[in-house]
Length: 284
Image 1 (spheres, one colour):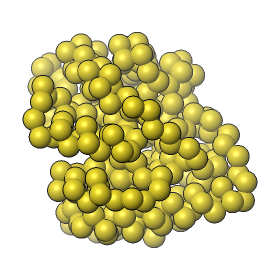
Image 2: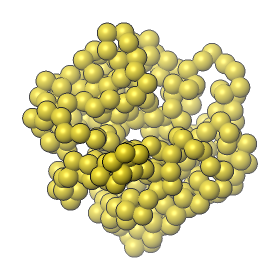
Image 3: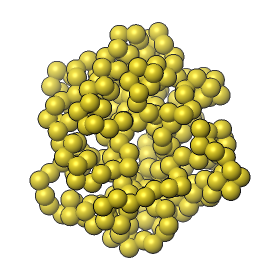
């Protein structure tokens, strides 16, 4: 079933505890994102619920397990499970991370930082190409949260821009990740935004972060376990003013609040989009 998603609107990450209020909600323009790894089964209640949600709302698939930033190519079996979900749910967008989580058959329960080197760029582009070829879809690549300076031959924004140039992929601009990384590594956000290809940005994420328990505000941690902070809201408004409206998602993966609390953040994000649309800011 084809469900239109135009003009760009704000959505929520779908959590099992929110399936019923999500299904019943009547808000115009609301869409949902899920991690495909949570739905890679032959059946069961999760797929039944997602069937019901998808009958009413657009969904996107946001992967966390392909390890595109690692040394090894994406697992063909994992890609086939992706393809099964894409065929079943026809998501409006698919996305993955500039990160790695697999090495020599060992899976790590984290999105680990990819070194910004020429060799890593070559591997990453090969893996993005492999994903797009296997799935027959353009993938959006999310910018990471970073905490410590690593070996860097290529600045992050240039790394992402070159990936877009080589593979034809798009970008998922995580505003919280950008804020956290710029704070921790002390780089210029405006220069970063000037470097990435604006027309490649196909989606925006907003999430919460927290100060490190020991270092305090010297180190910000992307926890997805807190409300969206004021500086992230301000950066989001600046990004929309710069790029024009894009689909935007509210992420919350820990300390999950009531559905209504997340909808309040979603509605705030939607207000920014609505204002931009009223002012006639064209999509790049």
